[in-house]
Amino acid sequence: MQEVFIEGIGIIAGILGVIAWIPQIREVWIEGLHEGISLPTFFLVSTALVLWLIYGILIGSISIILANIAALACIISLIVGVIRLRNSETKNGANTGS
Image (cartoon, rainbow, N blue to C red):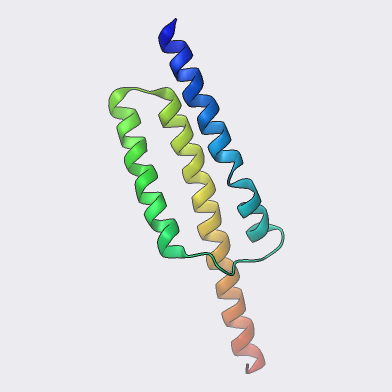
Protein backbone atom coordinates (compact mmCIF):
# COMPACT_ATOMS: atom_id res chain seq x y z
CA MET A 1 0.00 0.00 0.00
CA GLN A 2 2.81 2.39 0.88
CA GLU A 3 4.48 1.83 -2.53
CA VAL A 4 1.25 2.79 -4.32
CA PHE A 5 1.03 5.98 -2.23
CA ILE A 6 4.67 6.86 -2.97
CA GLU A 7 4.23 6.24 -6.72
CA GLY A 8 1.02 8.31 -6.58
CA ILE A 9 2.96 11.25 -5.19
CA GLY A 10 5.49 10.79 -7.99
CA ILE A 11 2.78 10.73 -10.63
CA ILE A 12 1.16 13.91 -9.26
CA ALA A 13 4.59 15.60 -9.21
CA GLY A 14 5.19 14.48 -12.79
CA ILE A 15 1.82 15.82 -13.95
CA LEU A 16 2.49 19.18 -12.29
CA GLY A 17 5.95 19.26 -13.85
CA VAL A 18 4.47 18.74 -17.32
CA ILE A 19 1.72 21.31 -16.74
CA ALA A 20 4.47 23.81 -15.89
CA TRP A 21 5.77 23.54 -19.49
CA ILE A 22 2.40 24.35 -21.10
CA PRO A 23 2.81 28.17 -21.01
CA GLN A 24 6.22 27.89 -22.69
CA ILE A 25 4.90 25.48 -25.33
CA ARG A 26 2.01 27.88 -25.97
CA GLU A 27 4.42 30.81 -26.41
CA VAL A 28 6.47 28.92 -28.99
CA TRP A 29 3.82 26.99 -30.93
CA ILE A 30 0.80 29.33 -30.76
CA GLU A 31 2.28 32.80 -30.24
CA GLY A 32 5.38 32.10 -32.36
CA LEU A 33 7.67 33.67 -29.76
CA HIS A 34 11.09 32.25 -29.00
CA GLU A 35 13.12 35.20 -27.75
CA GLY A 36 15.00 34.46 -24.57
CA ILE A 37 14.92 30.70 -25.03
CA SER A 38 18.36 29.19 -24.70
CA LEU A 39 18.69 26.02 -26.76
CA PRO A 40 21.88 24.95 -24.94
CA THR A 41 19.94 25.11 -21.67
CA PHE A 42 17.14 23.00 -23.13
CA PHE A 43 19.65 20.46 -24.44
CA LEU A 44 21.16 20.26 -20.94
CA VAL A 45 17.71 19.82 -19.38
CA SER A 46 17.00 17.08 -21.95
CA THR A 47 20.19 15.28 -20.97
CA ALA A 48 19.21 15.47 -17.30
CA LEU A 49 15.75 14.11 -18.11
CA VAL A 50 17.22 11.21 -20.08
CA LEU A 51 19.42 10.35 -17.11
CA TRP A 52 16.41 10.54 -14.76
CA LEU A 53 14.53 8.29 -17.18
CA ILE A 54 17.36 5.75 -17.12
CA TYR A 55 17.41 5.98 -13.31
CA GLY A 56 13.65 5.40 -13.19
CA ILE A 57 13.98 2.37 -15.44
CA LEU A 58 16.83 0.95 -13.33
CA ILE A 59 14.89 1.27 -10.07
CA GLY A 60 11.57 0.31 -11.67
CA SER A 61 9.69 3.49 -10.74
CA ILE A 62 6.74 3.96 -13.06
CA SER A 63 6.18 7.53 -11.84
CA ILE A 64 9.75 8.59 -12.63
CA ILE A 65 9.60 6.85 -16.00
CA LEU A 66 6.28 8.42 -17.03
CA ALA A 67 7.13 11.89 -15.70
CA ASN A 68 10.43 11.99 -17.56
CA ILE A 69 8.99 10.67 -20.81
CA ALA A 70 6.29 13.35 -20.64
CA ALA A 71 8.77 16.09 -19.73
CA LEU A 72 11.09 14.99 -22.56
CA ALA A 73 8.18 15.21 -24.99
CA CYS A 74 7.56 18.79 -23.83
CA ILE A 75 11.23 19.77 -24.11
CA ILE A 76 11.61 18.17 -27.53
CA SER A 77 8.47 19.98 -28.67
CA LEU A 78 9.97 23.27 -27.49
CA ILE A 79 13.33 22.60 -29.12
CA VAL A 80 11.69 21.69 -32.44
CA GLY A 81 9.41 24.73 -32.26
CA VAL A 82 12.25 27.14 -31.51
CA ILE A 83 14.46 25.71 -34.27
CA ARG A 84 11.54 25.91 -36.70
CA LEU A 85 10.84 29.55 -35.80
CA ARG A 86 14.50 30.56 -35.98
CA ASN A 87 15.00 28.80 -39.33
CA SER A 88 11.87 30.50 -40.66
CA GLU A 89 13.16 33.91 -39.57
CA THR A 90 16.55 33.23 -41.15
CA LYS A 91 14.93 32.26 -44.45
CA ASN A 92 12.57 35.23 -44.40
CA GLY A 93 15.41 37.59 -43.56
CA ALA A 94 17.49 36.19 -46.44
CA ASN A 95 14.57 36.48 -48.87
CA THR A 96 13.81 40.11 -48.01
CA GLY A 97 17.43 41.18 -48.03
CA SER A 98 17.32 42.23 -44.36
